[in-house]
Length: 284
Image (cartoon, rainbow, N blue to C red; front, side, top):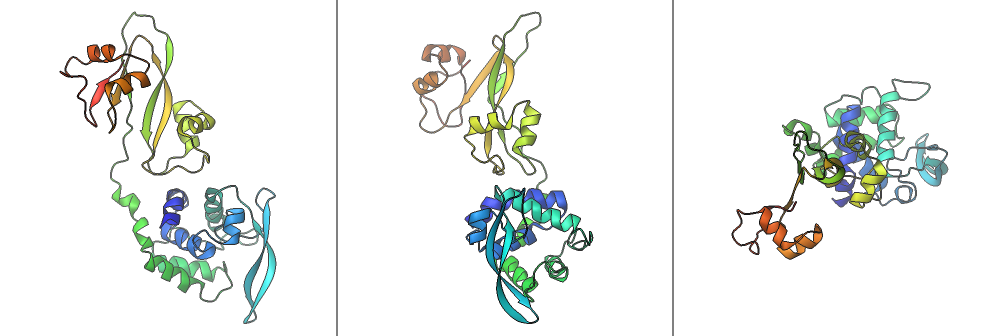
């Protein structure tokens, strides 16, 4: 299941954007790459066995084909991707745009809501030469209960709300100095690091640095991201949510303040040394 969890956020995003069943995308990824363990997947992030080159990059592998009823192995060039995401999106592009000689080649896959019909449409369009390709995809979908991911969007009534760790308060007629405030955000379905960077007026590189993200294409639903927002030095109220293991001395050190200062900002707390998880404490 770890492989499914790894590619699921990207599969959902691609499925929603191109109107393709997520169960179909996942089943093909599992079947074609042996759960991400195939040589093609490990060497080229190629999940679906798409041949050719990607930005000039390719991996040469032996492949099993069926010609005139006979099984043979032949050498072929397969696209080499920089990450799983590009492989997922490339498959969706193929289904949406078809091939140069037939733009409607995979037309029946787009928008199909029945996973059995979608799998059969893929085979009928000639995606693979294996005569049992659709049957194998259907079996993979059913044995792993992949259809549960096709209805995720319908179950999501309200997107996750943005949670911030700082509150900006304005005071009229008072000069202020610009300052960066760290806020947090819970990733929801459809998010991409580039999209969030644009929304927050920052860069993908800066978000990677703040969140220790190596691959900008790999963020997942429910992940907490830090980002910077402009505030005012004089007018910022900043809070800390207590977690297990915290104590007031540790918190004061983290925010470059003092225990006395925190105590003064929290007059409602009778004993500042007795704090508990999920408690919200003002630190500035």
